[in-house]
Every structure is written in C-alpha cells, then in structure tokens.
Length: 218
Ligand SMILES: Nc1ncnc2c1ncn2[C@@H]1O[C@H](COP(=O)(O)OP(=O)(O)OP(=O)(O)O)[C@@H](O)[C@H]1O
Ligand SMILES: [Mg+2]
Image 1 (spheres, helix red, strand yellow):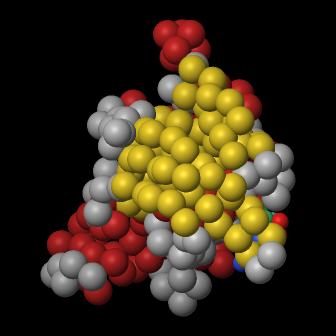
Image 2 (cartoon, rainbow, N blue to C red):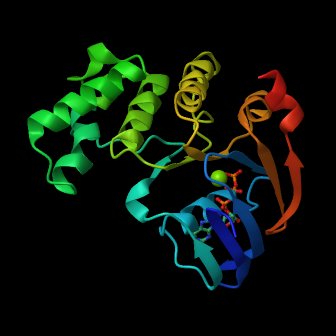
C-alpha cells in the first residue's frame, strides 16, 4: 500500500456516477499528474481526497488533513484580506500562532514565490499569475507534505502560465519529499515534472504512464 492509497473509490452526483472505482497508490515524494477529458472527474477526485466531497464507496488512505494543501484553478483567495493575511489566516486561526511569527512566515513564502513586495496589497490589485502565486504560498503555509493542484494555470492568460509553473517546479526542486498531485492540461509541464501520469477515462484509471525517461532528462 502506498503513502496515498485509493481503493475502489465511487462517487455519484444524483444518478450520475462520476468516479466508478478508482484504484491508485502514490509514494511519498512522488509527483504525479492526472490527465483526461473534461468532465471525467479529475476535480471531483481531488475534492474527495481532501474531504470536500463525501464518497459513496471505497477507501482513501492519506496523511493527516493538516498535512495537505490545495491550489485551485480560480485561486480562491479571500478578497477582503491582503496577500500576507491570506497566508497567515490558517496559521493564526487554526494553529493559534502569534501574528508576528505568522507574518514572518508569510513574508518568507511571498519571497519564495517572487512577490515579496506584494505583502500588503489586496487580491484585486494582483494579476492572475500573481494571485495564483499567493495561493500557492498560502497552500505552503502549514508546511504540507502533500500538495494538490487543480488546473493551476487554466484560468490564466498565456503569458502568466510559466511564472506559475516555474514556481511549482522550483518547489519540487527544493523539496524532494513533498508529494504532488497535479491536474493539468499543460502537457509539456506534465511531462517535465511528473514521475507518473494517471489517465482518467470514464471514471476509472485507464492508464498509468511511467515517466522515468523524462525525469532523467529533467
Ligand atoms: N457539485 C456537483 N454537483 C453535480 N454535478 C457535479 C458537481 N461537481 C461536478 N459535477 C459533474 O461531475 C462531472 C465531473 O466533473 P469534474 O469537475 O470532476 O470533471 P473534471 O475532470 O475536473 O473536468 P475539467 O477538465 O473540465 O475540469 C461533470 O459532469 C460535472 O458536471
Ligand atoms: Mg476539473
């Protein structure tokens, strides 16, 4: 059994069965991508992993929930909070961390994603790529072991895609223990960063592509 294991996962919306028995294992430190047709259940699958959906049947084994971070297509930043406050929120509210300490972590993370000077601005003044980099910094705040990305660049203008993909790649380079599950249509990126690629089709894992050749060249 893997670090992350999914067995016979089923999920329906009403009469519509979206996930029809997903089985997969992911090792710690692995970067895997999920590809497949639109409407095939990729987002539903990620939401099941972090408990945003109740599952109908099956079993999911994961690290504790507070070890998981997720980045959404639409950023989901809190609009009434600055970039730094967005990042500090879970540290202060959930972990009861001292605000000064949380602020320091937020500043370090903003620097890591190239947005040091944006700590005190509100999301509405940021570009899409900048918002997504803040969202990535926020997902990193509690030092997750697992990061989930649901099409992190598909809401972005083309010229902003690379700044976000480069940040994800550099996280990977810095921390080989971090496990990533990435849903993306950016096939060049997927081929470059993934150890394995899961192909979803009709609610099942149709194929698993071992991407070792590409990793060697990476
Ligand atoms: N909350 C919901 N209630 C009802 N149906 C839903 C809900 N969420 C998703 N669906 C349906 O489930 C199916 C799978 O959706 P999902 O978003 O998981 O697909 P996806 O593979 O992520 O697609 P895309 O590549 O377009 O993001 C779709 O037919 C969608 O309409
Ligand atoms: Mg989706």
